[in-house]
Image (cartoon, rainbow, N blue to C red; front, top):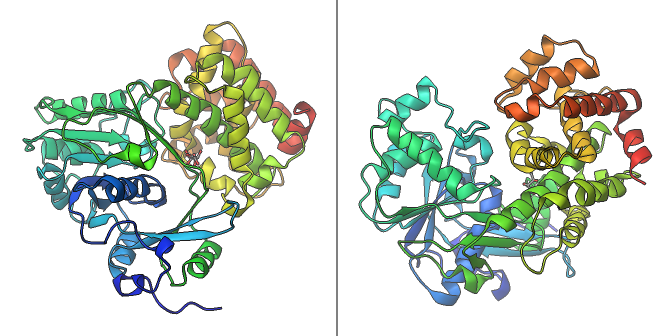
Length: 484
Ligand code: CS2
């Protein structure tokens, strides 16, 4: 069957009621600027916000800002800012619904001053962000990585296209209270972003105005890149063709620290957990879900597995990941009331096994230098402080190191999609291609590894041992041998 009608305002009346947006597109005025119009935001915060507005009202339309590429922006514009979310792997099979909460669109690279003006506008009371770890330009010590370009952006000498500069240039003129809500997988994300903005304001010769809050939040939903197959399935499930659908698993969770001086949507009415303490949720998610995801990605990619669900099927992988969870991760976490690390980890593994998602190992492997400090290195540091050796965490880190070499076990090339790719290639080119050479070269990256980890002789020995195992036997055999 070919679907010929295109998604747009005119197509909405022809959709079944459960596929239409929960709010009337265009009815809701903007109250939120969102930086990072990628798939994750559209399948997560946008749906929570649309549901909250449908249930409890409020001017909480989202003005979505694309940081760099215009592609999604132009396609959304052509569809009157409408798009669909295709939920896959649930009991009833594919289900699609359209979302109409986007009340405006912006482009940071093309019109940075327009985005600054939007954030400074008193009608906007919240800025949410999903720009990924690297966009915050923070080093392992939490300090802003300043270069000439960023300095020029912060002082007004160059257009403010980066996230720190967009926020700072807007805060310099803003009068009304504002909440800046980071929705990225950063440990301690609220205070960390506050610290980043404080430093950036200092460079601009200013200090933090009153009435600006930075609550922490934990976001969770697996949202892979949309494939051609997803496009086709979204059109079939919806009955009209959408050029920018997003695909997601049924599961979703959002835990938010409740500090919003300018008000907020009734996200609790949409199922979010509003709380005073996000930290236990954040740590649980980063360490017991994201790091396990990375383990599947690096070890799976080395073993030639294209998809996360296929990596999980490697003999021994399930056993290895459970040992990683129970022996290394669980002792470092005090989970929220009513949750166990093991139970949470089991649910994560079931979610990773969703075959319909088509989540590629290479996608999760991306940006390892930015992700691992938040999801893996804390576990290692905490266990080492206790005098224990986190053997499985070391295997995962060695997996990243082997991945960074750029070759899978069958010799095929692995993409190193990482903001530090140039630095990584440079240090590896100057080192012998041995387990020891690999480990020493990469541990020397002070942009990634805190001094305590880089100088840990016991950990270094363990990393060299695992790198040697992976080099000699390959990831598949290494996992099969230990994951019983
Ligand atoms: C993944 C996350 O790509 C990755 O690094 O681990 O995007 C993961 O799918 C989400 O955090 C799940 O909420």
